[in-house]
Length: 257
Image (cartoon, rainbow, N blue to C red; front, side, top):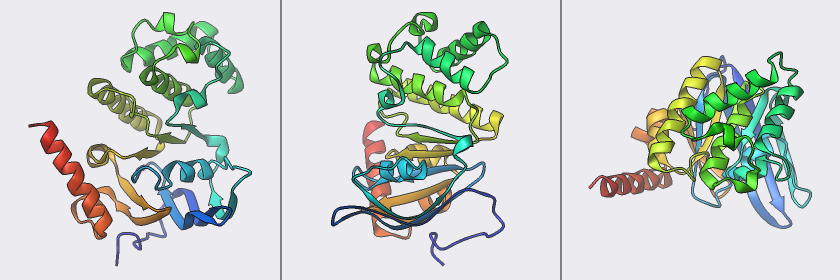
């Protein structure tokens, strides 16, 4: 039985995608895709640019585009899900400060914390993620942040509602190695502390190897291989998956000399 076919019907699933197809006029963008995400898993979605990763996660969140045609079914509790997208500024309103974002989100969840406690909670997280001068950062507008700063701020804001499921689309793409390590360490701490499920979209197979419990490989709008991360990484069945892994290993060997 292939990795993609293995199923455990007793598993608690937080997301189920069934036979999802997405079209733009006569072009197929996603083709008969099915995906199951186990509760409390760290599920990576991997594929090259244009494979459909970002379109898939937006569809999971019911973020549809009027120019596209959708077929299939997505089962997710949107009240307990949140997301951070690769273009972090798309998560942020450009005409209000980070401090105002924070107040709005805490008010929306009817937080019992005082405003000072809310800001302190966020500033503590900023410091842990390597963001310097957090008090000053609160006064910034999103367009004043660098790409890496915006990604980390958007990530922090996505946590305020305490989601059961967090979808992260290339959350480390604008970070250097040191800040990427800090980000991943903090993310894993939060997952453990809050008992969260994470869908993590990435092209970085080293992150899959180090952190993922499950992985799905996408190519041309389809999931071609899926299963437990260590099984897929060490015993890939599809030629495309094997090629991705070999390429990543060569890059890692070159980078480390």
